[in-house]
Image 1 (tube, rainbow, N blue to C red):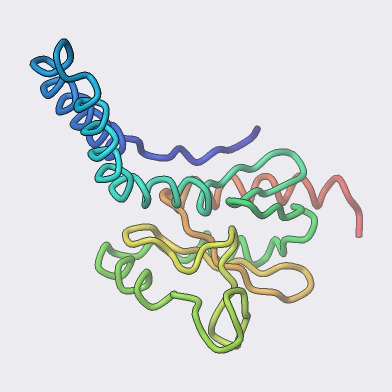
Image 2 (cartoon, helix red, strand yellow):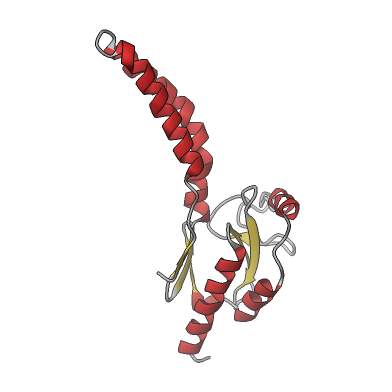
Length: 179
């Protein structure tokens, strides 16, 4: 594996720790006498915990980026490095990172919902790689073209590291396969 974008686990850790502390506190007095009541409350508070973990889990499923020697994997999607246009990667890496306000505005404006369906690719609406509906709030988006002209939008946490790793992998891939 040449590059793997790490997913932050702080929010999930805080939520799970708060759940375990709360369940342990409730169980300190009720376990010897009311074990069934304690189990019921654990299940009830687990239902409260699940919505707090939904966003980190969906980011892990749809926006996880991994680059190996031949493949770029984004979420559930696999893209061959030979299919990626190296000039679009160079252009994206030369464009500077946006500000935090620009990232949030781009996140709001890149929701990929229209009458043509989830994965449509209109003139200004790039298809979001990985299967998600949009770029999550606070993540940066990078637009890369494939050799057949399709524009793909990638949600990334570290734009510079992702583009550097992708540029190296695409250049190695294009050097290994002559056109």
